[in-house]
Length: 289
Image (cartoon, rainbow, N blue to C red; front, side, top):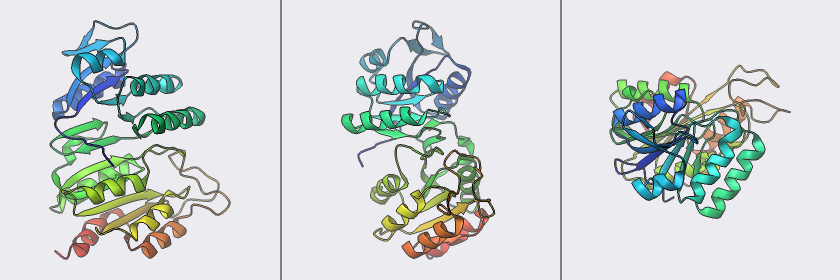
């Protein structure tokens, strides 16, 4: 993994003149993120509280050196926006937008592979390296810098667990939302590899949920890791065939069950919490503190 997110990252916001784009662009900037520009077709030449707005991503790259993009674009236009960003040289895309058509996501990921780009999401809360850079929509006041990495499909659960870790005296080295759709860019394994290499991360919390096989695949990789992993899986009481929250959170034909995920993670060497509030104690046990 060659992703770098820190205080030097130069972020552009695609869809910056929309309500969500403008709101979160300002929240990111207030947090200290270097939001250098935004795009909105037909709105070039405007500004959002001092953030210049351009017609194209290429202009943002050429004039401001933007190297990461947060996409707050309506779902039908996400594919075009992502292609434009990657074509202009952006190599980190954080797609916050929800309800992106599956085939559009597949096309985006294929182009990302061709261009050597990294895609977080769609339907992600984003990435935060506390006290350095926030690209996304998370409530940043709950994060404090520290040594625990956090990777999750769910935004709400990640906030709850990050808060409990901080309240227990821990801090967060980075938190990454891989996205709640059935098909996403960076996987659990991709982020685990990133955190395994990160010098600031001592232990990792993986937050999963029912549906799909991503957690089981992550469990196989955890067997090879040096750093300890604590996991929590949501959806213990979810009925089969009913989608719970995210598009990817559905048990179909007995696959993707809570029990199967927990068993796989335990066999992989992770400590598995039955409830979110157990995570800090398990982290403490893993690090023998």
